[in-house]
Length: 413
Image 1 (cartoon, rainbow, N blue to C red):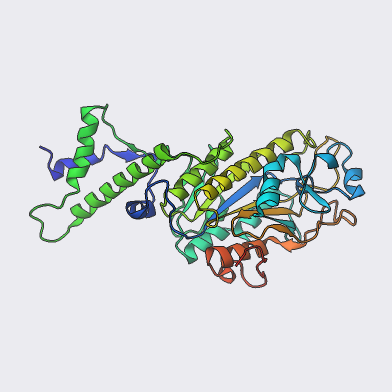
Image 2: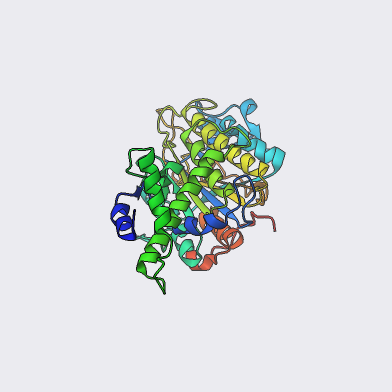
């Protein structure tokens, strides 16, 4: 017979691939079954396009002759663009994003986004975007500060060997980096069969209050915590088994991470913020035009986001979720001698969601009077963050960003 002393001894043999966040343990018990809508709280998905996405080939001013003059080999032919207005077209790789823009009106394209005196260093510029500050020393991220101001459970959905972003630093508790639901799987040391059942039985039985205990003690607390974690692990495993996407997802790592976000959102485990990255946008050589390396990256991004949005929309969650996409900078206006583009400055930001005001915000940056070959920015990226903080997450943006960044009008009331 296994007594409580034996449980404590054997519990050292149990472990998880990653710590199950406390909020999962609390909310999973009350969460609705998979396949039903969760709470109506808003969810933010931050998508980072790592490497400096070429904004000029993403949102193309196809009536501008300077565009084709500066990019003789990589400009996208007008007849292959996906129009989103009288003068603009999205790259054909963004076809699925264009469909969300034109057919559903759930995409906001904010043009010319950047910051004063931009750095063209990947590391420095990414830190500026992550911290929402141009200070010399940056130790906290804008998302981390938001998590400190308001308790919002969050996940970093990570690729292999991807470090946690600075954007999440400063949170009161560490944001877990998760590659799959298997990261939460309870790993028993038993070889299987009866031994596995015995270990699970030990955990369940040990969670019962001691019959001679008149007041809850430390042992009871430890036991209940262990059982809650065990239950959460089982709950998350069930999420993975039961989830059937309403629309197909592309078979790409990026889309799989968005599918994982959809699973956790639909399961109602309480997560409010997800952070996802797509790397490879540093296209100095062989960038390509309508097809090629950059096109493949844009397609991977747009197809993944489209599947994610449509999947959640089919589940009645379309108004809960907003996707915010950014890159650390755009590329220079003219192509280089390697048929690619070098580090630039301002670039578009995309927002996608059922309560996003669809349309184009701001004028396309002028391609004449370039600043050191760069497109000038017209909108400070912190105005986009201010909108997300104030009007989506319900966090006072002044406390996170400081004064002087009026929020953009990108959300429907």
